Length: 154
Picture 1 (cartoon, rainbow, N blue to C red):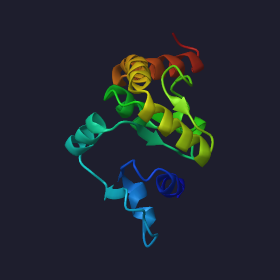
Picture 2: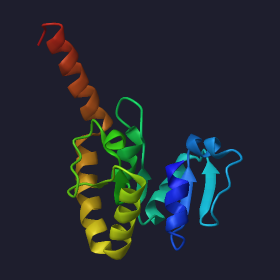
Picture 3: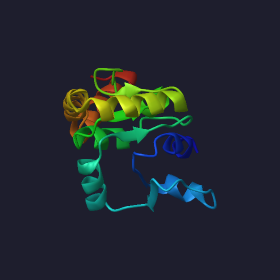
């Protein structure tokens, strides 16, 4: 798991993993700076996101939009993701988040946000605005418009 190798290279950074991906760690040895919470409730996730310096979504495969990214953005968490992790949201590198294509890129991006809190705040503010534009009501409306257009109705 890429996050574990990144955590080994950043021993002064605490990594809190929340979600089903924590189950994949199984018997893997973890660095001392990694806490695997597993699946957490909505309230705990809100607390974690409100306290974090950066939220990570280093996905390397998958399809569709990661709705968790909107949660990160809405919570005001500076975010680092891969292009796969950020797909479908219209989020731009260095505007809404930082994109990292490799473990080396993740390490560099985490160091960058940790060293420049103001930059993290600017990214988070832009991402928060993007999240407001992608709320469930607007997503549903746009989906309905798309389906109706595809069916030849308006």
